[in-house]
Amino acid sequence: MKKVLTSIVVAFGLFLSAFITSSAMAGGFAIGIIGATGKVDTKGYEQEGNAAAGAVTTDQEITNATMQEGILYGSLFAEYTFGEMYGLTLGASYTPMDSSIGTQSRTDAESGASGGDNLPKTADAGTYKAEADISGHTTIYIEPTFMPTDNFGLYLKGGVSRVIVNSLESITLGEDSSAYGNETVLGGMFGLGAKVVHDSGLLFKLEYTKTIYETVKMTSTTGNKNIISADPEIEAFRLAIGYQF
Image (cartoon, one colour):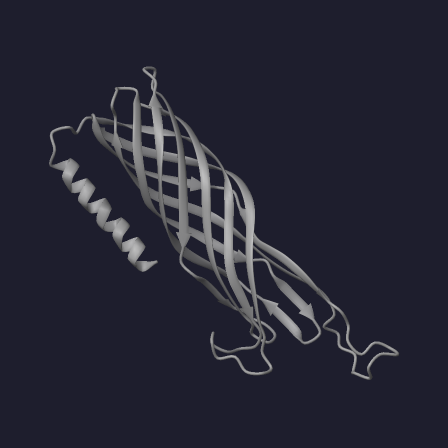
């Protein structure tokens, strides 16, 4: 992930340097909204007991999971575009709403029930629910653009995203107890798209993006100090409507 982020930052610098030294610097600002639909893929595990990943003893358990969920969200964006046939857009977007990721549950039965196998009863039986949400999603991006006409263009997209992952899991069942906080993570975003700029200034963009985040790792602040680790990715199709002036 660090290599991906470094590559994106270097690309920012190279494209910006090339266009600043060119003669085609005329451009304008644009603001607008984005509607997106897509999916979140989350791979990860929860490790019982307070131990580093990989150092698992016989009385610890690792639960692996892979989840995929559909998402629908809206964002705000502001950007500046300069250049003519070969242009460049620098921008930022912000998503004010939260999105749920990695929701999953399991039910454990009580052991040692009356008439059973003479095992002691435990208070760990019940439904365990793992859930998290993401909020404060902010992206800065760059779009090298080819404009074959004054009104239509094709572009590549790259950027760096920042998001807050908040674990909503809170378990208090017998000896099993865990509650996690939140973590701020970075991600590398890439994609491609097409845009139409009307003579009136109206701007329409249709694009596909994929964002790969760094590993999210949290340790429970209560109970038996469980550890969770997750690698989320977001794929989305996005429609942006704005005004360029």
